[in-house]
Length: 192
Image (cartoon, rainbow, N blue to C red; front, side):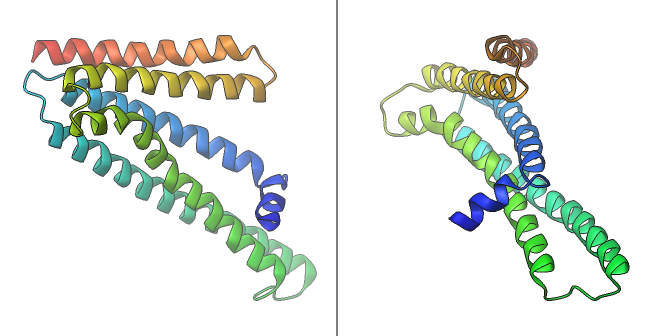
C-alpha cells in the first residue's frame, strides 16, 4: 500500500492518473446517461436490456480505455527509458527504473479500466432495486439519471477544488452539460 501511495504522489504519475480518470469518468457517465435516456425511458423498457446494456457498454469502454492507455503510456515510458539509456550509455532492462515504469503503466491502465465499472455501479443501482422488486423501472430510470448527474456534480466539485476554482460553479457547470445531453436524448426518444 505504501508503494502505491508513493507512485500516486510522483510528479509524473498523479497528474496523468487524474487527467485520464476524469476523462474516462465523464465519458462513462455520459454514456450511461445516454443508455438510461435511450433504453430505460422507452415505452416498453425491458429491465434485462437496460442491465445488460449498461454492464456490457461499461465493460467495453473499460477495456477500450484500459488498453489504449496501456499502449500509449507504455510507448511514452519506453521512449523515456530509451532516452535515459542513451544518456547513461547503459541498458536499463530489469532495473528498478524499468520495473517502476512498467508498474506505473499497469496502475494507470487498471484505474482507467475500472472507472467505467465504478460509474456503472452507481448508475445501475436503481435498476438492481427494480430487479429486486423494490422500484418500478420508470422510477429507477429517473433515480439513475439523478445519480449520474450527481456523479457529474461531484466530479465538477473535485475539478474545482483541484484547480483552486469555485467548486460549486464547476459542479453546476458539469450538471448543466449533463442536463443538455439528457434533454437532447429525451427529446430524441420522444420523437421515435
